[in-house]
Image (cartoon, rainbow, N blue to C red; front, top):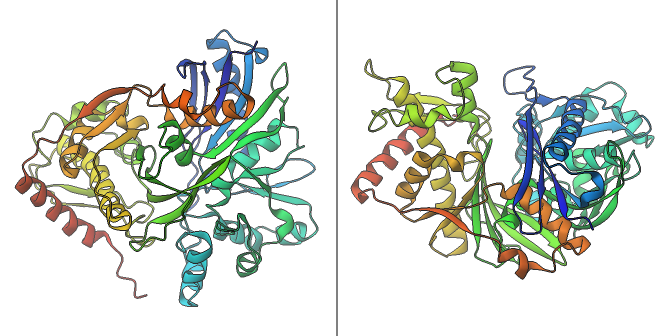
Length: 495
């Protein structure tokens, strides 16, 4: 009998594949970074064919490392970077352009124009989102208007649009299946989260032909069979955007439970159950998942989290490996008065300023690489603090603890500072690969690999708890400095 689930975790900077057993523990992991393409300042692209080929290679490597075959797999679950936008030829499967990544800012004039026309309340009411280049709708509109012949071919039904989940399912099934799930659809600015359907008014506002769009399905069901690259067919049975998948993997099944993922960006999600809670503090209302019934969530999306560490490594060269940042930051006792606001792609929740840009404030002749590394890590934690406070105001529930996951959650210095600046415990689970685990759980539940939520909830276990130790006066002084630096980073654009 098949005794493993394959999770495909296609992220912003790497393609990953993980094998999970029935205990929810990892049999093997394979990961490979792929190229980040920056055609102009503020533009970010990926090669969809490299996403596909690298992901296929990682599946083969994970199976080899786990001494497993396709016949050992009960199902495949897919989780993905969410708003990244791909358009491809339905017949050949060839992309018409590079993928436009969620971090990309080129479509700010499109969303600014819709805001100026007074249309943001319409989008927010229907989608739960704000009008920002972050989401897929404006990226798709840009492709239709700027890539030769794409609008005409789309109108003729020759092309398909999808986020990365749709692209992978299409390729895995040999072009047989064009679907997405409700969690990914809810991130497009084209999907009515209350009616759970593509919205004709929003499609018209962006000029998007209905024929481009995938069929929207639940997050846990059999969508089709993966045959490409595998020596035996395996059902694809779970799909969720990365942050929703991580929330499922953290077993936040009840209203009021939530988590923060420290990945390329940071994403704070609070389960609100069957109710789509409207935010009064510029958080997002989104579909968490549909596994049986639909669960909704509030989300605080922060564009640059762990990516700031990559910037220290790749652009400044002050560390050779990402893991070295903790030791460098720990080489100094404090930030030396330095604040780093990593608004490389604008500011996300709760500020939503696409025109903001990153700054380093407080430099002196005595500033060192250690101070800069520490300020970079602290800048991640400050952004999470701002999103948490907005979420407390919306939910009217004070945060009691914060469950964390993602690559940067393994950084003890960052986690301790996060607990200190929030004033509540930060809890890291034994398995921090909760994004992939959530996708595996959704696929396993659809195929009977696991019996239900109670079984998988029993598998969650705490690894370490970080208790706040910072004095209140110190915390408030640091936050005052952060707010001053944040104000300097914000754009002066007149709305």
